[in-house]
Image (cartoon, rainbow, N blue to C red):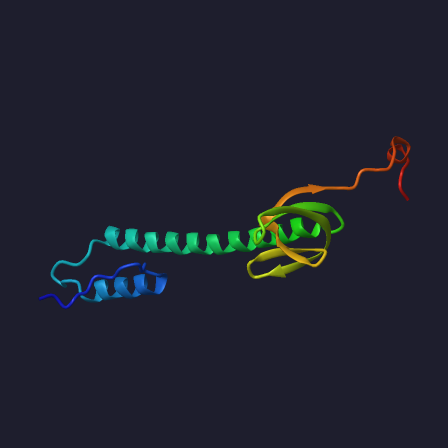
Length: 137
């Protein structure tokens, strides 16, 4: 019977990959060592994997900043949003923005509205055409 149990639902991280790689190098047959090209190819794969992982982290941070800026631009504007508890489309003015680990949350009246629930954003229309033509100081 084998002492090796299958691993399900897990993936190798960079630490596990490096440990496996060093064990492979240490346990290789000294009479038939690994080809240097194979060794370099594995190192290149590891380096690429690590850089892609770092890129994913940085893209996540960039997305969070962009969402925060978009949410901040909504302060003072009217929005429509779907109330997930009632299933009713609601509307109101954005009074503030809270930045949470789950993403920006708009404060609309007394409601906390995740930015993903917003269906429309609009500014109040001027009272008449003359006000629209006059510059605001």
